[in-house]
Image (tube, rainbow, N blue to C red; front, side):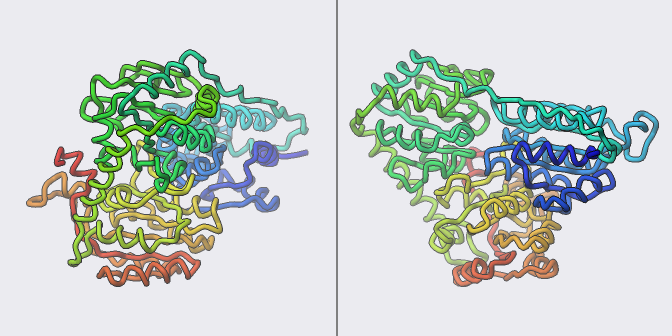
Length: 547
């Protein structure tokens, strides 16, 4: 007679889940002991929010549901930040929390909370099974909900006695099937191509929808046949490499002034699988000309035209839409427009400004550091990015060249998440070099996950830009007088060594290249504490309206 824990594991394995991101707790022991016997891969971590962050990155990287498993009560409340982060990013995480026994509900049980009430606002769907035999049905329903339409997290609260209960084996395993991706209307496809072809200054902005639909090849083919410049953002970073001749980098105007100027001059804008949200200034005249024609492709109907009037709105799967466009174009090669020379010149000017900001003084200027890293990093490197002024310099300077290799915090901007994100990115890519780029402030949130990296022998390289403060807020407040922005110049390399990893302290630019080479050659967790100057990043300059 199988237990509820065994049925739970049967169900997740049927849905292709072989990994469990977790932090042990009383409510989970039956599941974890059984999972250990079965040989499932278990990444046990040090904070429940970090557990969900790691599962979130696993889901994004593999384009399928991932599992976070935490205990109830404070374990559940800790996990909510990670769940909200996944919700904002549209990541299909199956978040599962244990809870007190179902027979003790509403009786003042140990760690009893209204977990369902807390989580509903940050998931697509949530439920609590009332019998052990129902667990497989709810797991199946949850995984389907997570991937239907725009992906997103889902939640199950499962009482501890349901995991422990023995059943008669008559469990229901639903045969839930995702519907076929929605196809575009052919008239809209034809109109889109007509607008792009007759435009003098068209641009394409590619977002996460390109990644989730697996439309890498179609985006490349469209760019090459139409010769329309492509800018990428969110999970589309690296899906069409910045090294490609028609790729022009970040579609984030706060980090790419060349993109901001191109968007302002564009007469037709094709947005693929990207919300027209704060990242694109809500489609406002701060970035886009009022007269420019907008075409938006999104699988979620509520997104189309929400913040910017559209001339063509296509509610469909991005891959299906790009396939329809390519079929309509056939073998035709569109001629190159003079516009391409203009956007190349804009890119050259912006890169010159970025490199001109650097100098050889100490502490190290972030621009000088990232220019050196660009020349030193392995060619197949994958990035886990944190927030803050230090990381923003790097995101402006370093190219995205590998699909799935540019992991960001997402719209919630949950700083600190880069470390747990990096652990999952390394798990998903064991043979690739993975770097976590973070600031001294951000590192503090989940610093105990350095222990997780060492225990699980995940050879990430962590670069900490240490300017002894919350750099972005320091710049926003003004350097003459700051409140709550100053930190100590802690030796985080020593902290890493205390956890059992390796580390070095870097004080000059000349030390960077050999240290990077040693770090990646070590094939063990390695932290470089880089003493950098606090300098207003392009992002903060944009936020302040300074350039």
